[in-house]
Length: 399
Image 1: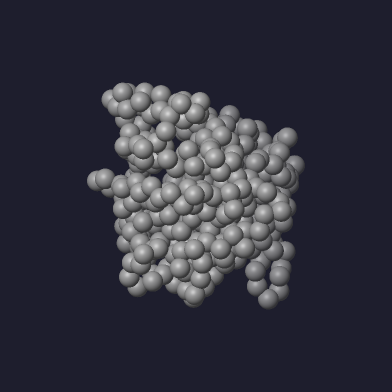
Image 2: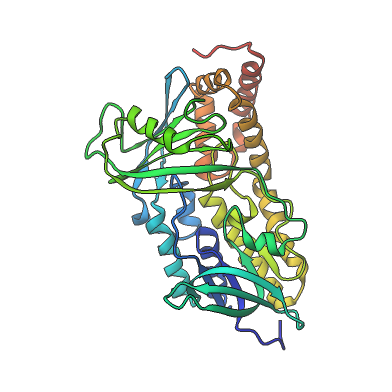
């Protein structure tokens, strides 16, 4: 876009994985970018990432705190099903290191990184957008900056979306809460530094799950739920006791809403776009968000670069179209899984039992670690489908 004077080409509100990835890629493309981050707040997150993310986004393996070799699924009756990961791993990052690294990379690419709280935005008469934010310093000064485009990457309760996207409506979400604790130096009967634990128990979470995820010298112990009267802190305290980590030193505590469904619209048709949690791209059932957030940031950066080069606002619709084409079916299927299998302890028991199946394990890890399904394994897909239906109808019993 030419002939229009602004402070920046793009202002990105939110410096998490999605916003920082978008800022990095747009700065690399020669765009002037302001990355606005609110006090570098750490979001509650289990920290799991698929190994394909490392190559796709050029992330050094040294950022991994652990390489998980298996997952243990634990049912309401304390039945334990171990799911080994063959030939690969699930990476674990700590967001207090991972996010700053991403922001630093964006800054090295040429983006301006500022600490401030986003307050408002509005279109000026010339079509540019003015963003107002409060600087996080002693003066608490209100600052204004202008841009051709604004990218909202400011979380599940995105203020950018609320102010800028027509017909914006809140999407379903769960409240995630976790406590980062010092991990045991060695494996114990209840804790393994190379194993994730996922607890499917109604007393720990009535509609989602609880977890214990190793992070090397620390561990994330958390839970999610959409129930307003649910006490996440009490649930985490219970899980810490069950896992033998109740006496472990607490490093920090964090809580925030996690969206469970992509928004139907991500742009305003003029110059505002949202991505990451602000667009609702967290996988239902699993709560996985880092990979999808970074992909969403990349797709948004590509679209904004096209918009700036051509002036065609239709380019801003492409991120959602491309994302849903790539992962829409996965999100739909996981949404069904969550609504059915997390409904009661009886169904949770069946779900964990089903995880004993080798076909289920193979396809689960293949889909998670590579973010795609192997088409040549059609027979395995069919077997899983048949077993799933039999479980639903109560015609099958896991061994």
